[in-house]
Length: 87
Image (cartoon, rainbow, N blue to C red; front, top):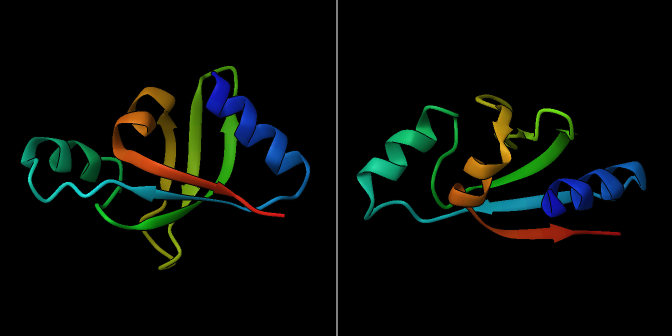
């Protein structure tokens, strides 16, 4: 919940948020689960939206396709390692 609230506050303040997915090369099971959500290892995404009620986050893939839609925050925490909030 804390991550979702932080994302929501940053989005409301028009601050960009980027996140880095984990290196999943050595964990085929995690990589397969992540791919089901369009999450690829060692890749950056931008937070586009959050839904506090359903506890999900929507991410934009900077490559322009395969965006991550309504990812449960619990899975977000498993797949991602870094968050940056800019001014």
